Image (tube, rainbow, N blue to C red):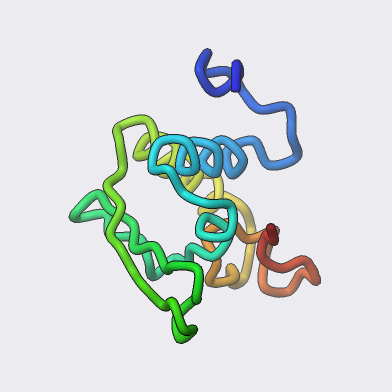
Length: 112
């Protein structure tokens, strides 16, 4: 948490992704499972919001959705992550926001 508050770099393999994940969970009060299931189509940059799918996912019993506003810190982290993501040589990215890599890689989305 100190790294997040101080604005330093995360000492991880994917610092931009991990910083965005922490910013969203803290700044938008997201649950781990909600953050892990954000898809690229859920981003609403013109409204500065993200569509969050509830505990039931898209079709479950408790399938509720809500729009969560992005605070300036989260928006800055999202922009930085998207710049890093677009600069990497990848034929096609997976549709998850917090993907572990390209579609050709075996690694998939982050899990709780």
